[in-house]
Image 1 (tube, protein in one colour):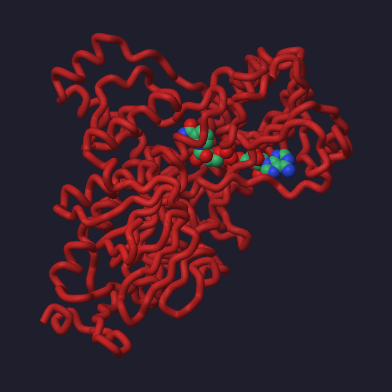
Image 2 (cartoon, rainbow, N blue to C red; image 1 turned 30 degrees about the vertical axis):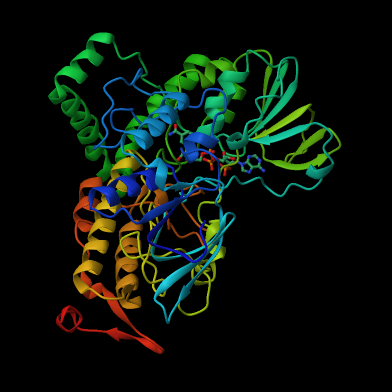
Length: 506
Ligand code: NAP
């Protein structure tokens, strides 16, 4: 980075959110921006997760940018290598590479209240930016539980999102910890290879059949030559999922109807009634993320697989001790224990206008106006921020809504002119969150009788969006200037908040 570099916008991260932001900034005519990426390649979670069997369980024609259709998706649920290659292609097609600074992890950033800009310290040097768009994503920092004795384990240990491809699992006794979306893809992929697989299950998951199939050459040809077929396919996938939303958010009892499909999967694959009972959840389906797999239960029925229906509590040498006292000796431990979602590490590195970090501001729970703006953090937006997650549809739809909001944010700053910043009013953030939390009370995530990563340590759901993607699109189409305080820089003076919209535009 050059000395005293200043940019109009700094985007953090080059996953779907960061690359999408870069495309939309360019399309809005803004080219004075950088994308700060901590790794040496683009792709975010689809770069980091390369575990065996890694694939998206949202159909590819919906799990892609509307502005970058891909007629060539090979399967309904395409695998990680294809998704990663898609993101590399988006990077090249839209000319994003010159904007990206690789190996430039953001170490800290601070709002300068006099200059009305962000001072950013990265692993490649420092820079300042008028606006920061944080697209670090909720699934970027792996979480390994603090298990006593783990440091003394003599074998191999890794997290699902940091797979060690140099480690040969053949003939090894492997412990898989967790039964989330990652673990249920890993289990059937490594079961045929390992000598012994022991799955530590703290809570059984609801797993429905995965209707995957190859997308035929004829379909691909049609999608390439007749774009309307591609659009129709995407529209159908989208509308089917929109219709499911009210069951998740208003009538969770209706979801009970599909529990029988999950139970039938268990019954068909698992003959042992004791194992069947251990695998059958006792909470409402949808309370945790619904998982899709047709090979998970058949893998668990194989003779080289053991299920320990208890969490990992302690490690003694090469012996894993479960909470129920079961002891298992293994050569390797794979943690499929998820990510720091509600306690994002980057929040500790961002210091706002009041001198507090975002993590301090969020100590009682994450809150941001329309999933984007936290009060006291001017000209700062999060992509996939608080309460923007989905349980049943494509996050790319939510990202694109937030990108509309980002473009309008930039447009409003332009219209205000001069050295200006927008800071979400605490009252607006509060009102937005009250509304979201009120709606949350009826959702399956609250009433379903489970604990999940949707909930923070206070039991509050600060991650999921309790509505349709269409509704979120509507509420993020335009930035309401009345929800923001307009700050104007006056050299040598504290920025002047401009309260009335008319006054601000004058
Ligand atoms: P996760 O859903 O957070 O699951 C973590 C698992 O680890 C849970 O089963 C949890 O048990 C378990 N666990 C934690 N500590 C444990 C302990 N001490 N002993 C035993 N088990 C323990 O993590 P994930 O599977 O990585 O998935 C995270 C998210 O990534 C998903 O929800 C999804 O959004 C995304 N993802 C998506 C796909 C896709 O296909 N699109 C694929 C993979 C991941 P409890 O349930 O008891 O807490």
